[in-house]
Image (cartoon, rainbow, N blue to C red; front, side, top):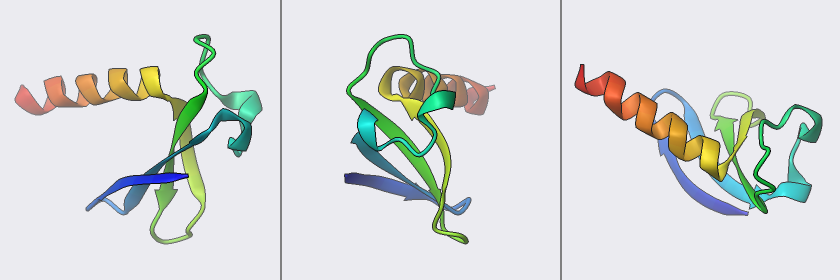
Length: 69
């Protein structure tokens, strides 16, 4: 596990091996990524969302574009 930072909205992100996914059956990844990103709630301490690194990069780009508008 690698902690990669947090957000003021109440989430922290961490990178884990794909085998450590909380919900592997719901993971959106057709890329066979070895690592995934988990968003962890500061309130519950639980994994709230998981996505592969490629989808995380796509999400980040979409958020950046939305913030510019």
